[in-house]
Length: 153
Image (cartoon, rainbow, N blue to C red):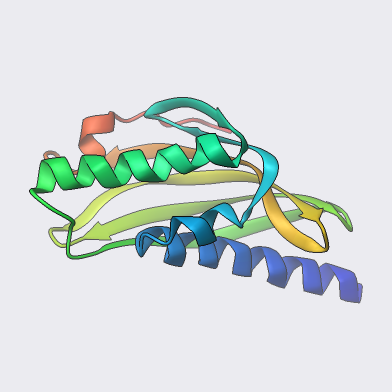
């Protein structure tokens, strides 16, 4: 393995970790810094979002929904990712997939997969595409209201 491959893999792992930590903490400006300007994000609950301004609405809408159904901001929400597979296509393009599960005050809420494409923009690895699937959710949980639409991607 060449040095650029090690650097790319570690940078991409850090990218995914920052997405989880910043999103869960409501630091949406920092989350938007993780996306290429023309990135695309897909979720089971909304139409595809193109560009960082549209992608931001995924997070602000989720924050609003959590506030409405929970009577205020939840004590915490934690996304955990595992089994992160990274396929390097070139020194500036990669794709990946990982499992996630979301823990909230009541325990496990929902789970699924992220299917990603990454690219180097201005010397930094960023998301160029992110697809979030939902494989399951607990009845009555936040994720349950979105339904469950798994995919074999």
